[in-house]
Figure 1 (cartoon, rainbow, N blue to C red):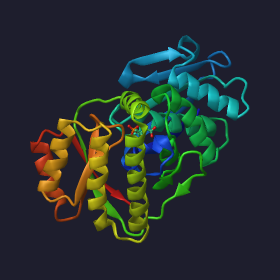
Figure 2: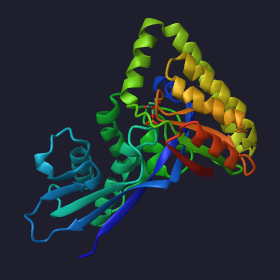
Figure 3: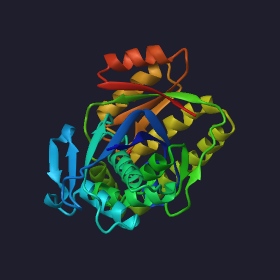
Figure 4: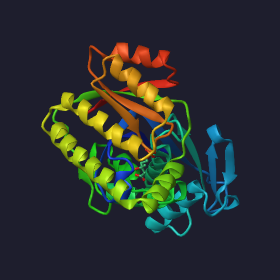
Length: 313
Ligand code: PMV
């Protein structure tokens, strides 16, 4: 019996995190060196409709109906089966593997969802448009995040750079000239739901302060979009530094992130900022072929727990 496999990349947000939850644009890109993978194997001897979910990395090996109805994996399988018009799935085992660190702003949850959706569609001999894959994954993102903007599922389903605005059709972003980023992991897990709800609490107390920062972030995103499309990525560094200051002001940075960002800039990065929910997780630094090795070495020395070099194209 054949197996049906699908993969989905990690992602990083280049500009606009948090403000994007409040209707401002963001820019996000896939990171293909990290991937989630779902493998669906038919189990012809098992009763019709029986689905076994296996994710060794989190110690999961269970029948789907044993899982809480709100379990993200159960939810994604049920939503996909419904979308594909399958009242019952032919019995199968779904194996999930991922090299994407969890709770570090790399979109691991959305990537697992997208991989499972596409592998199940293939198992049923169908394929789903990117928009539908993204919408299904968004439903699952709500379990992880509470009020996700939808940027993660969009960029991961599309597998291309996106200019994202909540509630609008997916807009792929043309990258005029490739550029290189270092992604450095602070090693501090930081669930996005926590920082998103803290920002909301602050916004409720002082909406004018937050709205002003979100507007400034939106301006930065627009400028970044033009630079990326026009093939002038070396000028993005300054915008990254400015976005970072605004993220500090909305309270989602941390001393550890600031230290890594300062290290990257002192070692020759053109700019650096946190990426994703903040407080922990990853920073990104804009480098070129000359600075990449020095910046990377300095980040390791400053305590980075993992470093990925990625090319945006
Ligand atoms: O932590 P991440 O990369 O999964 O994304 C968080 C991005 C936020 O803007 C903070 C939240 C959201 O839903 O867009």
